[in-house]
Length: 313
Image (cartoon, rainbow, N blue to C red):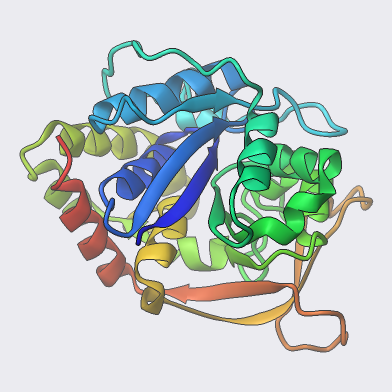
């Protein structure tokens, strides 16, 4: 039986690749729905981009919802400087033909979890945690019903990519991240410590372009656009590929290693707001609330990604 998942996302080129990887893996993953959140760009573009991606994958049956347009307490910070004005610059994808679902994304998450058997739905979060935090505030009973929350977010050993201390997804809505990490549901975190090892080098991108399908061409165009900023910033052979690690963890967890430890989010400090504080060495005695992943096998990851993308239109 495939694992039932809801993808919460702010696509974003790397989010798009994560969605495509999930949709290319129906034997393992059943995507119940996709919920957009404000993050990489504003909610309007993210909701449109999510629909473009499911259509690219030949899956217009996947419902797409719009969630929260701004963080819980803060002004929205976006990343057009990385992802372009639309959030999905690079490929020339047609405007979506499928409609956005009328229900608010937060209510969809709550209703779906409350209607399902407890422990049967996994939340895959690829952006700021606003929708999940709001769902937990509105209906705290969902915490006991979530099978697992698998999130791309945070950093400890690699520290920040939007400030010196904070990773983007956590920084955009640290209050929501704090709510989520305290909720008691099982959590696995794919931080920059892992994703900075998963680099989309020219050779890996070329292999995707050479798949000979529409999806491969689009993914190559997306990542060629979005990686320009990171190549300049880090000076590495390839840019980090963040969000697809969430789906790869569900498909092939042996590609990653880490440990169960306490993870907390800084919400007050002017200097380090949004910082992910991972007690990796267990020095505080605080409850261990997160499986915090630290290393990833890049060759194995890109082998999996390329094999799966080949299955799409």
